[in-house]
Length: 147
Ligand SMILES: Nc1ncnc2c1ncn2[C@@H]1O[C@H](COP(=O)(O)OP(=O)(O)OP(=O)(O)O)[C@@H](O)[C@H]1O
Ligand SMILES: [Mg+2]
Image (tube, rainbow, N blue to C red; front, side, top):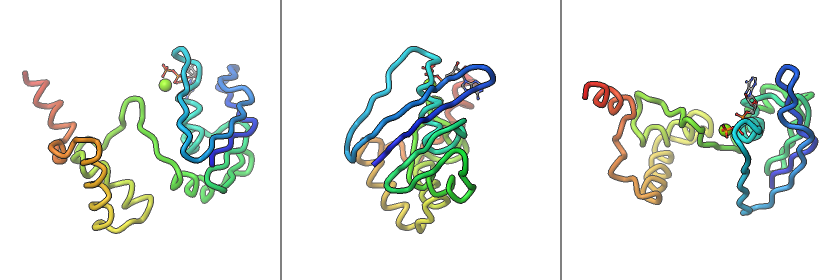
């Protein structure tokens, strides 16, 4: 399902990822653990080319992208097959929790608004956050900064 071959990332003079090879099967749950600064986020960012690897091949769900030849189209395609929660969340601050879930489905996956709404509702219920549906992160910060 996910295959990583000879993945390398070099920042300046530092090799952050040195020849990573891993095969992850469908339904397998993997935890990456290690001290701060050892490259966990860098590895995840390579999976959808938020960081372009120095070298290596990534295959997700039968689609292979090679760092050496990756085109914009390839990168777009691999992004349609991946999703991540960022360490610092990176939410759209002027949008509600519900809109944050819907937005990628509409802009990246090209789902209709109606379909995205149905999926988002299902997901937000599943994680027990239905009452936070209309919550806006920015508003909360403004409120708390006045306190
Ligand atoms: N864009 C970048 N340019 C240069 N160096 C970077 C860049 N991004 C990360 N690094 C460096 O790469 C190394 C790995 O960083 P990374 O953020 O992947 O670590 P991490 O394992 O996710 O750490 P943490 O547990 O703190 O989240 C660190 O030394 C970091 O300073
Ligand atoms: Mg990290």
